[in-house]
Image (cartoon, rainbow over all chains, first blue to last red; front, side, top):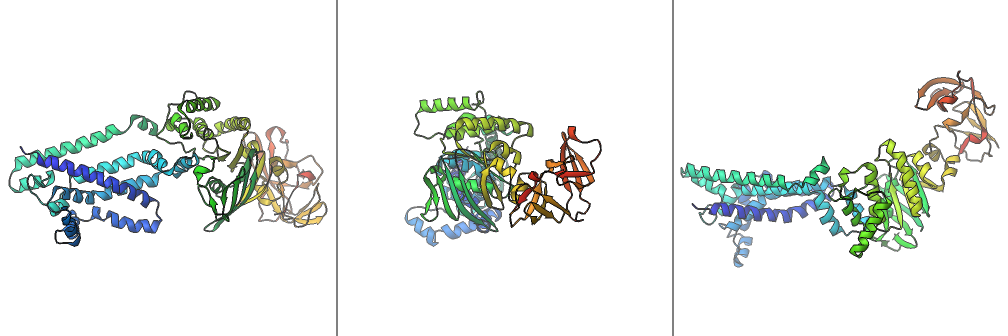
Length: 222
Length: 347
């Protein structure tokens, strides 16, 4: 039994999720403070990967990072190649799942009651302290929802991934591409096995989220 | 302990112009919602930036547009009690209060300060609760405790009682007033309720459409509002344009009557106001026939609407408010007003 697709899928999803968190939270925070018109324009750009077919996203990624493209050639000099490598899968999954993180977190930041930040300021607390100790915890459920959604989306990524990194067993194979490959080659039983694996992971993630919700917090909200 | 504010700010069509001095004791700003009361507090706290002017607290310049001084809220030492109390929802009462203390304090002194303020504000037993589990009064006291431990030079209260139920409100006003007088702080409070303002504030300023008018002794302001807007905000129901007819005589064309006054009428009179409580069926002063048109029963008072026979048809009826135990068996034919109760309004 070759467990590589499971390992590969998990590390791609985890890294992609971490990447979207680091980029999506600041983007969401700054976008939530922008004037309406600018925000609308920025929204279109940052949300496009969610509405475009993943294959189109993959096409654009190949346009940018392809081996014969300027950026691709430049990166190759330093030994970084996103095409046909497993970490190319991180790039593809992060691109596709970014809008989910950005939009959910932005919604949470916009719903934040600004008086809480002002209260922190008049109490002498720094803006950094307020961000990490008040704003982020107060927006916690929205941000957590963004993390889960983008992780789940990254785990299920197929289109952009197969465009950018293809399917090489033991190198770039993920659960999603493996299922397709096995089905295509009439290996129905094994395909079903991987489908079940995927189902279990998704269910575990969702259960974890429910457990993470602090009981005392729930009480407060009720 | 003194606050000096002289600022201007434009926000679209709205313009704010505030000139205010506050000393020890409770100074109030009375105004309808949207008149710029909260904006004034936010400018003092450094949350909003005025276009120009000067804010000085205890000799320290917080803002000066000419000297380009604009201290961040963190450096202003201003205690701001928000209308919603702005307690951090994910922290317990204890953690919320600790947020008000600087990092420089040692652990033991923090503990002592916490115990002291918890006792002072009767928050014993709530330390481990989250804001969502507190009653309105407890939440208010927690927010106040958090502010007090930060050692502010001035306390600013933004509609402090508006989030509370009516039956709690009056009791908490009494509690808050005695607490604040014990603390001996400079307090600036904004409210839209004239009862609250009258009860809490020793000095009062009236705010209308972004303009803050002269700040005076509260009783003085209620007794002689001088401006139409102050008369209305302090609860005067009957206001009509008036013309000076003599040194102690004014004509009110809308009502079709002339009234004698106790104090001399100055030039530039705009209107007169008569509080609904001050009509009297028994007096001979300023007594005129009246026609009752409608009445409204309140728990302890009657509000009787009436018109003067020669009153202009498209003007509102007048209000007479009378305690139930003093309502005459028969509606009186005439109503009078003591000359001292005719409020002369000049602006």
